[in-house]
Length: 343
Image (cartoon, rainbow, N blue to C red; front, side, top):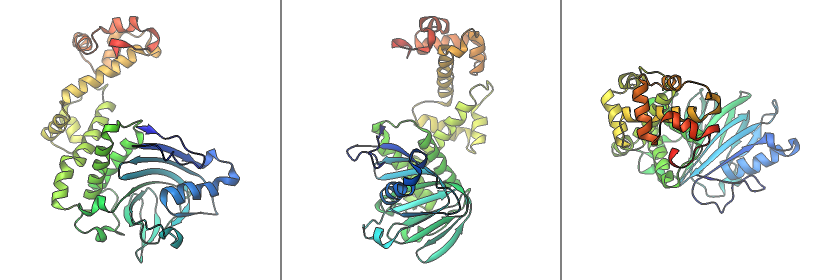
């Protein structure tokens, strides 16, 4: 992942290649300049919309933006505002698509229609048409995906019928898309060789959310949907590592899939559920052994806290993974610094 250093106008350097991640916050700006810079940076350059904040509450916007090949995503927490594509902005010829989700109710005008979207509902917009979006809440969270029409045209039965059509909150495909986007938001970096695959996963999930063709659904099931489910399952496993009774059946039931399907997901990633759990527990134990906060703790207690129920099994697996014993790595690297063969 290339972390873009903002230029003076707040945008990432145009010379950056590949994926870029940058943040914008009105809290970092002089109060007198906040609105002007917000309109220029986020409004005209990122969202390609005019932003009109509500006069009833202080202006505050915090945005994290991520650029991937053929895809731009941003997560914002904002005070109440109205956004619209004005005629002046329409002259840019931009016909990209914007998919927007928000956690608060808001009113929408698009393609001559008016809607009131409920909390957690989403909608697909076209940048080729004027629209206005308003929220009455003093602060709301929104996720926006910007992508070319060609990215979805082949995957949807009829692209135009997907525009200005509310996507209900809580629908399975939308939830899966939001889970995957949360993983991207929280990920510190994405390896450059994976950026195109990650973008494809997002487009797959978005197409399924909006009503993909049968062929596109089959591709998505093998690529985007599987990837999103696997990452969600891995997150649950990491949260439950201290539970020594955790099983495939428990995790599968929590994610409403069969144990066999769960096994297939891990096999598609070149591992098994058991191997993944063991690797994560060993990694957690290693971090704890190297942490100054664990100084003085018994190795057996650390092993049990990581979900290992047998200290002999833990020692054997630890040595096989790190070519040293738990006690040796603690003595060899005091202060929590790891080098060479202990990585």
